[in-house]
Length: 340
Image 1: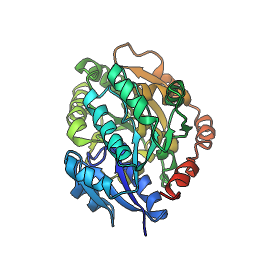
Image 2: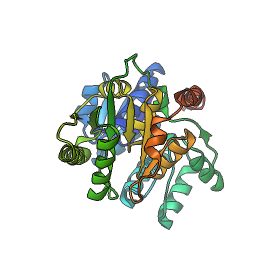
Image 3: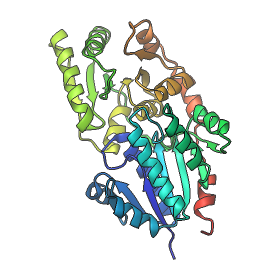
């Protein structure tokens, strides 16, 4: 009889990175011949996207408990679920789902997560003591690995699963991709300064502006486009929204430059050999830009030489680092194929 797996993550919100991770997970679990139920904020969207899976609503607790009770495994991840930067409530929610599975004696897998930052003492206590009882933990960065090690918890340090994305062969065109997301640090002053710099540096190129999660980001993208057009009415701009994962990957792969806030946008840029610059809104952006020696913009500080570094970027150096990023499924497969 097929084993049943419940997936818990930031699914159904139509955010590119998390939906791409879900696609990777579903594909792998189907290869392993598992029955899949996804906890999603939009079950109809999720079941429409994937064939032969079930889905329950993120905030319908009785349905989540019912799905877990009938399952053999819970997989939590990937992404940055276990942190309280978004909110303590978010952290408690994902810990509650894990705790529910543990109480029901289900095997729990933490999948390629970034753990932290967690500043609330209660959040730290709960996270540490709940994770100690999980069957297998993999993390996507060394700081998460070291944090768990300091708590006495073993984990496998892996790359982000999105590094396994296949990039279609696309010719580079005369375009600059700008990917923005809403956040508290994204002020009108920063939007204006970024627009001024891009209008000056890339006046001869088309500026493609990407909203990866329309409910949060589309308004920001429209404000940025307006700022660009006010500075230079002749500059060519286009907003990309409501796109599938495949459309996003194909479109960004054709760009010459990428200026991005989101972690997974940066990964796609790296994979597609697009010269990439990060915008720092979160520790994970600092980590990946540091790892690949990418220029990084601060939203509070004046721009320095970041755009010069962007234009002079060594794509061969990046390519050699990317080739080392092979996702290791062995620990995951061992647990999922074990007798429950």
